[in-house]
Length: 162
Image (tube, rainbow, N blue to C red):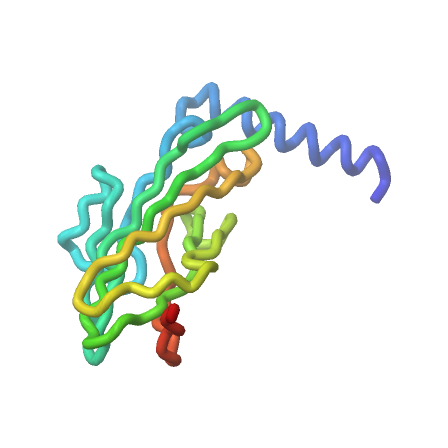
């Protein structure tokens, strides 16, 4: 790519960011609200940062809530902390894994993070919480308006320590 093309792109991005800041509509310094994602019901309370999930038919588990907030920010990046709560209604311990997805206003994924990389099981008939942090450069982070969790239950039984 030619240097002048890069310079034009950088200038356009800077003009856009300055215009957003001056108009007061920038989300760069605001925590991302949690809104309804797949299988969330209308009882969700986005202003508290918690979305309640409905239990889909035939499943013995559900995502109870997804929460996120900005924990640190500087001139280069924003750090989001997130927490996903899963209810295991099955009769045995189960391992759940998935992704926390950071979405823009059109539902496109800006970034994501792994949930339960360590494969920690949740005991039968109980809730488990998974937490993490994700650092995202300022420009993409300024577009984040929704955070959801795409989770799945692993088919094999977790290995228990002896």
